[in-house]
Image (cartoon, rainbow, N blue to C red; front, side, top):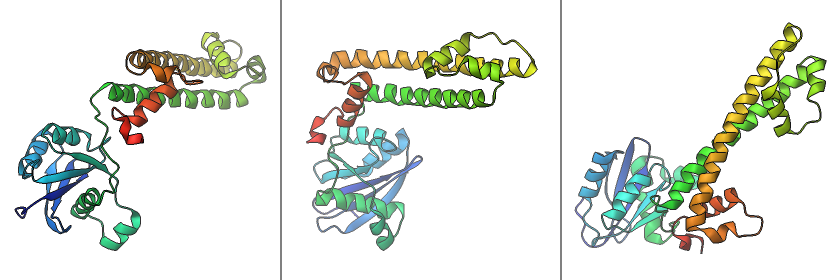
Length: 254
C-alpha cells in the first residue's frame, strides 16, 4: 500500500471471513488496498498497517452491526474515528464494477464526502444486550407461529371428532388444551391427537422461553431506559426495539 502523504481516509469492506481496507488521499485517489482475515489476528494486522489516528481523518466501515462489528470496536479503541457506511448502490456497482477493493474505496470516498450513516452503534453496552435478547425472542415467536399454523393445518384434515373438539378456540387456548389432551379413539384419531399434543407442548416450551427473554429485556429497560416503558402503548418489545434502533448514541436519530 502506498505510504500516505498528508491526511487520508480509510474504507473497509467487511465479510464473514475477510475484511478489505483501502486508503484514499485528499483528492479521493486510491493509495492501495489490502485484505485481512476477520479474526483477532487479522484485526491487529489491519490496524497495525494504518498510519495512525492523527493521519487518518476517519474510517468508513460497512456492516458495523454485523460482519464489521468487532473490527469497528477495535478501531474505536485504537483511537480512530469510525463511521458507518452503506454498501454501494447498484448503479455504482454496475458502473465501477464489483470487488472487495472497489467496495472499500467506495466506503472511504463515502465517508470523505460526508455520505456516511454517522457514528456506528457501540455494540458493547446495554443496547447490545437488548439486541441479543430481542433477536432470539423474535426467532422463538416465529417458531411458535410456524408450529401453531402447522397444528391448524393438521386439524383441518383430522377426524371430525377431533376437529369439532377444538373448533372456534383462540390460538393460545387451543394450544394449551391440545398440550393436555389424552389421545384416544381409533388409530387415526389417536395419531392425530398425539401429533397435535406434541406440537402444542413444543409451542408451550417456546412460549415460556420467549417470556423469560422478554422479562430479562424489561429488567434492562427498567434500569437504563425507563421513559421508553412509560410511553403510551409501548410494551417491553416496542420499547426494546426503539432502544435498539437508536443505539447507545441517540444522536444517530437526529
